Length: 384
Ligand code: NI
Image (tube, rainbow, N blue to C red; front, side, top):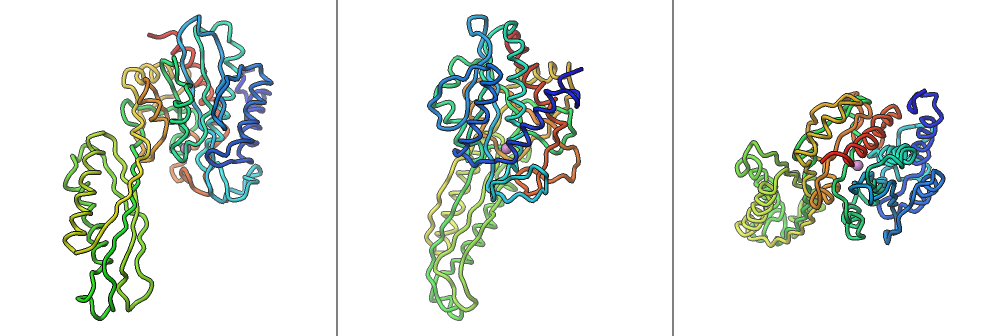
């Protein structure tokens, strides 16, 4: 009987593990119970836990660096501040917190891989470092793992995200950008308030803001090569509180998503130019606050092509359509060659997407995700 036969005790345990983790979600940097749980499973299975200065997250190792290279497998472990509405028997018991991005599925898959790789430890031609990464959702964890020294000596790294758009049993990969670079902007506009009947006595904040919001759309339509994907979204606008007063200040915020350094840099530059000059033209003052999120999740072309081909030896592999969401796995790929895949977790095109309160992943996706780690880890230790 295969480990992934639905009656096999290993598969049943994996499903139980995922349901346990799903039931007990913790937010970014607060994954203390999750960390304890992961450590206890790894310790039960005899997997070495590496020392770390990280308050949450687990670094474990299997194999021997004297026998070959060091490669890393990464899964993220944090949840989101969302009230779960799935009605699952294993729904969150931590009210207002939910594994709505499926990181329960990711860490369970890496645990499963740890178990299987441990069974084959003597034959491994090098060292596999397992990174159970905290704080992906706030984009801090990847950088923290690197700052704590856990990428030291690692030659290659692989990771994945579940993807409800692909059926279980499918891996989707693409060379180059698979997830977008993320920028967040917050803009405060200061005009001069006045009676709504006497706009000439003030400086209209709302007219200034709407001009800015309209004009920044021209960054995509007029300033960027149409072959280089870019998104500019204003998502939150506030100004005024009644019908007969022109407010003296307002606020809007949003995000830019890009897939190349050039598009990103150009979009940021044009955003500042447009917003500052519109403010000037309308006589308002403006303050722009910028938060730089993860860079583009950039799949090393040669390594991705190899992982694509190797993955075809054990499952169905398709060319991925890149996502405009961001992913802090990008931090690792800036340091070393890395491959980030999508692994099918549903396959219904109407299935709720990431970060929805009724988001679901199917347990049936676990075998492919575990195999993705195990088979490609062994492959990466031996390929050059
Ligand atoms: Ni996620």
